[in-house]
Image (cartoon, rainbow, N blue to C red):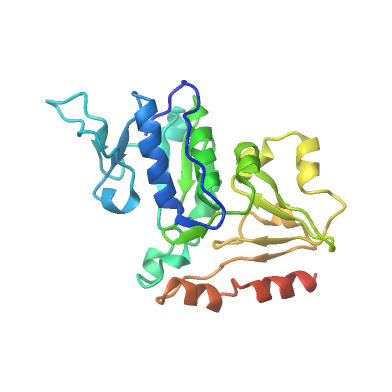
Length: 269
């Protein structure tokens, strides 16, 4: 899906108390974007029913129909967008171990660290529907850099009262999701490491103060790359092994992604 230089489209916000998989909220964003930007194109290989990247009301681009807005392609046609500085948007769905029953061959734990290391590629992993909307808007604003959206199949609860903050925060790669109340703890949502790294020193200090060394990074993926954010005194709750075959919620529990375990890890710092 190619970028346009036009103004941001208007996208319907997601309300707190609801839950929607980010690949579904991305599909909703695609339909809204395509209705407002006529030069926007969708596309997929043979997985359109699963990754939700097609423009629903449009026909396919074919030799006899150049007006079609959906492009069918294989797995290699758009592989060098970062090198060519093309503002393509890659939609990567079925993220991490929550895919569940399909087993470790279908559960990417190392690939996120790999794509984050690629030059000239924005990698954004939104936490809810509103962050997904803002990630799409950020991607559409790019002119010489592709964007990769890392989306989940499982439902993600909409974060409380943060749709306004997400609109600005995702554009800076990370923002304060929740300040402490009675305890000295801050929750930061970091969707895009490389975008956060591009911010000025003052903004980075406002999010991750240098004098705060007790840090815990939580991500359903490899710990690789999180060391520079948590520091030598910090810890990670991540996945540095292969997944397993079981319902997604069971795997998360088995791998330690539970509130009690996160609290215990932080208290051990």
